[in-house]
Length: 370
Picture 1 (tube, helix red, strand yellow):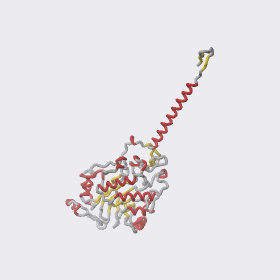
Picture 2 (spheres, one colour):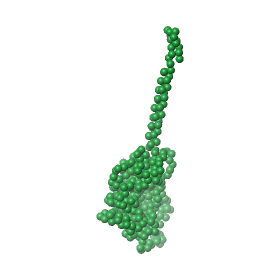
Picture 3 (cartoon, helix red, strand yellow):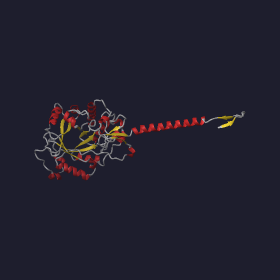
């Protein structure tokens, strides 16, 4: 724009420099704000990236309405009959309905119960009658599912914080009635496979290079055995089990995942996984108190006496448990005989067998049918 000066007859041109500089400043501020928003969005979204065996996706808790995954049934536990049920534990009206097992077969001493139905008096009555008719003196309940749900009342601060404490109705009362009826109770816990706590407390989860949680082929996350709260959390649950009257525990999924794209996991990469898994079991044995402790072995650990994937080493684990449970077709399987020889020699730890239904049951050895 041109105009005359006050004391001049000449026109003066002031130009557009001031407006151009102002526009550049505004543009720079817009770019800085945009970059800040993008950076903030990146770090926020990174916390919600979940890697699976097939890729990744975003997991926003406020949009998720999924129910925790429920594990498969606990198999039926049988024994050689050395621990017979006391006559005083039986209902006199049910004695005539009992089935006497063949002399050549072990007496069934424990069977599975459904924790979600234990608050139903009719179900409890049915369960007790079935157990008495089968000669059972013990019952097994899954108290911590693979999906992460804890189905018993617990004072665990970690369970409350993560939201995994979701007790079924009437559990405490139902367990009390079963104990008063003379039954022994065993709790099954999925130790590291957990679809709730690793999401809520990610410092305890197996994670990828970016810091996102890792998932197995079933889209289930895992607690790291070395997690700062993993042992404390499971230990708190074991304390709750003992308070509710459980006499023993079965620890499944102890250690690291055996399947999936485990090469994506950076948590404990390069660490001694067998030592970390054994240390976790030692911590859990102390928390178990007077309860008996049984560890479910991976197939590789059972057949090779070591498993680099899961971190399970039977020769190390036997020092901190009462029994090791293995999948087998028969007690005569070569790897079973080798495992029995190696583990039970000089140790109080025993080998228990998970056998297919209809299998010939060995005498003098605890077995799980399923």
